[in-house]
Image (tube, rainbow, N blue to C red):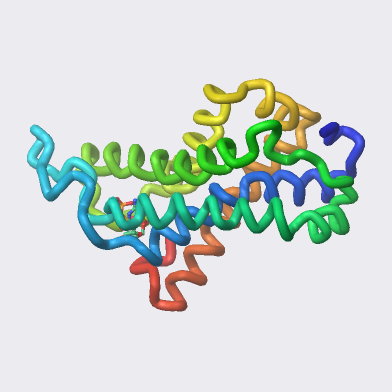
Length: 194
Ligand code: CTP
Ligand code: MG
């Protein structure tokens, strides 16, 4: 895949397409979540919850499976769609091990979200309290980090193709994250619009 051959908008959509399992795993976690807190209700030595009731096994597992299903649908039924918008000629968007990368994107996003909750609890923020920068980049950061460890060649094959991929992640991620959360809030599946 050579993203430098594409226009700004095409790269923009390709990057969103690649990252879709990471973007949507959180949405699935909100839907399936709420049962069996991962920290089992335990507190850290600072007296606050380790992670809090917002990080549960049902969310972690449901979100990971949801993200994988999205990726599977993208691979098997989405090519016509993305090829038409981005003129991408059936690229191997997720490299040689697409299911592994998709798993790491979905799971990594939720792991990043959990790590952020850990830091939020250490800063005495309660479940659901705002922490704008952390909330917006935690999930994408960890998702990309896991793929970097697993398959650096794949990540470097697109993320450094010009400035547009990184620009897209930096600019579109917060907007998309906020947009999806506002929708979830309006639909009543999320407690806060962030
Ligand atoms: N959720 C879950 N398990 C996860 C992630 C999310 O059960 N691993 C569910 C929880 O019901 C959570 C909701 O999705 O309340 C929204 O997720 P998020 O905004 O990440 O959690 P918060 O409730 O805001 O908690 P925190 O302050 O720890 O982020
Ligand atoms: Mg939150």
